[in-house]
Image (cartoon, rainbow, N blue to C red; front, side, top):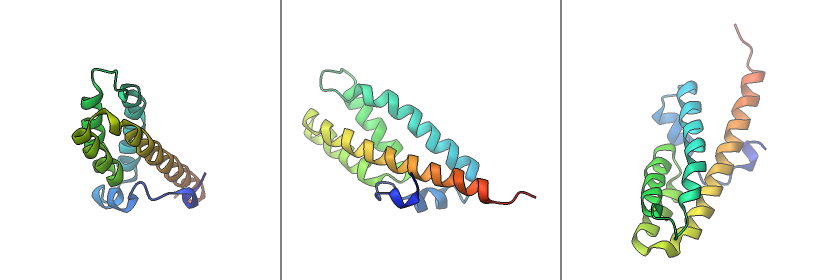
Length: 116
């Protein structure tokens, strides 16, 4: 998995600019997003009492990391109800795949960068 595998589901330039190039912050924010996504995924079920809260939380977090399409899909699901949960799960999967490819590429780059 490498940068070439990015689908465009996450605008990493937005995140990099927002973090002002602070690599540690970028890594931390993306790690938190991935950890919490595991929790949110279990709540994206129409039978789950908290699916609306999960969708709302994902919407804000997604927009914070630059996953604007995911944020928009979440907003649509908030308006349309549980019928939009499949689209949320699909968009979340795409965003997570992009984050994994981006993180992998960053890890490879850090190995190539000479340390002083």
